[in-house]
Length: 410
Image (tube, rainbow, N blue to C red; front, side, top):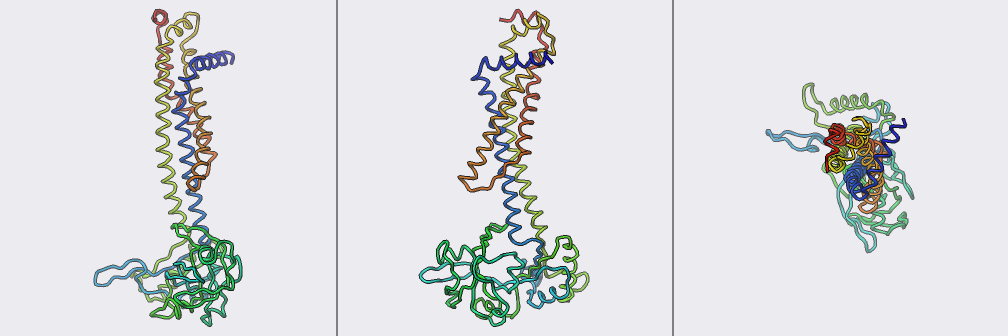
């Protein structure tokens, strides 16, 4: 134990002898560790943001939309198939158990006016159960009620972005009148902010009106009851596989799809979307980590180069130590200690730099960052391993010097 303490003390003394060179040598490791931590933090932040955005759409949700059509050998895109209907949604609600709620919507883009202000936004025609399925509470007023949907009432519920653009930030719009395609609507509610969706769209940039009002007085339709999408909220995510299977069977029956024929509808679950988004974010995180690790390896090469120079400069010193009884393993240990001390010191400073850079990126650019304790510990241990790996060759070279030849070295 005492021998190791002496070896470590000698190694640190050698590094203090040339502080500028030691600092410049450790700079590569500092940059490498800082880059690893900041890049991993950026990747982790992106993953967390994606998961939050997917959760904001509504948990335990299944989405059903029209599929594709084939006419004369030409295949249409998604949504070109036979339209879904309100009757489909009601059949799902009646016949499938374990559901928290069922909703549907029609949507289009239109200009909304209020006083002297105007704003182009998305108009959503939805039933009363939409807010429950989306888990979207109101901040003021009320959401659309069943009587208003039954009578095609001209009432509207605003998203936070639309309310701010038409009436100003912090102003309660409930009770005000807006015009959608020159049709007057009374604002009865303001929704709580939802933020961006997983696709980067502002969910609060929306106006919600009764579904019957949308299809009869604002958006229009060729077939009453046709919807763009049906959304099903499950009581428990454990029932997902069963619910999806039952939905497929029910819709194939209602749409008279024979065995062996392709479905003309699509079913997507939030768990599928979450898995896809998480996979994409993980790939991005690994890519950033790989790029940042290159700079850490470059720092290790710098340590090896400086130690090789140090071995040449201290050849006579090594010869003297061997002449007075130092063994090859003692010389090897000393140079390895120097390499590890350089890389570990660089790792500690690099951790501080990486955390600082992560906060700067988050503050300046607004990108989400999440500092991972695992990345901090892992990058420090990796920096120490880099010191051992790249320091071994110079240390081995020093330990194999011939004592007599070393003493003759100028």
